[in-house]
Image 1 (cartoon, rainbow, N blue to C red):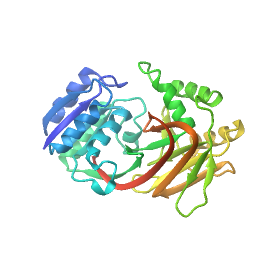
Image 2: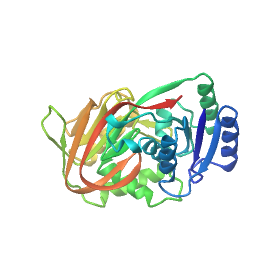
Image 3: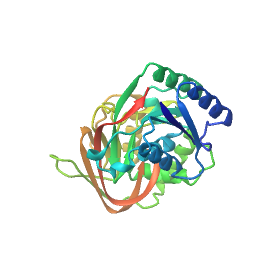
Image 4: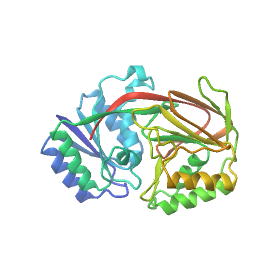
Length: 308
């Protein structure tokens, strides 16, 4: 088996020593090349080349941003068309970031050493899993995408790159983005096949659940959402403090399905279209992509093989 280990040396919990241990362990089972990323988009370029060269496995060692880049590189030649996905390398993940949402959702340990043991055991026993992905405006996402408030938060956090992305940093960014939204609060119109259009001010589209973590605490928006189902939608058409507090509290406290007069919520959707009255921030897997006035989200079943 030919494999490439893609390491983001800037990720929160990656170290040179950890990289060497991981590489040595993997090299005992596969023919391995190691690439350290040194610019944004580097992991995507490496994964795209790996797919074209017929590599069997690409292992991402970094945070959710590194994983997202690798996934988008592996599927780059599909050009955003799910019907054009050909044979692509399997994906392995050894967490090295602060949140590691995708890895945790797959049951991969947040500890890089333990995650390495899990990966080696899975390789030895030929154990893998097919997972569905989301596709939004040509960008593949593994766990979440969104328009509005959450994307504003992601944008604020991105400006603090170089500072460890702790739960406290996200909380401060959320509060600032709530009281001072950088682009205001343009109205969003949500369109789902077979449903009447619905209005919202912020929208979260999930490919699995939990949607994120506040430290070690999972955030549940669509508990029925998984890698084997369609997309989950969680949108609010009002952002008054009582509404926000109620839904945040429930998201942190329970896995039950949330309800409320300000909430627009659906599970297992094949497609969602969201139109914005004015440009709003748009994020995928916790990375700000830019601003959009329209995004179409698609669920793509069995898009990728993950070694777990």
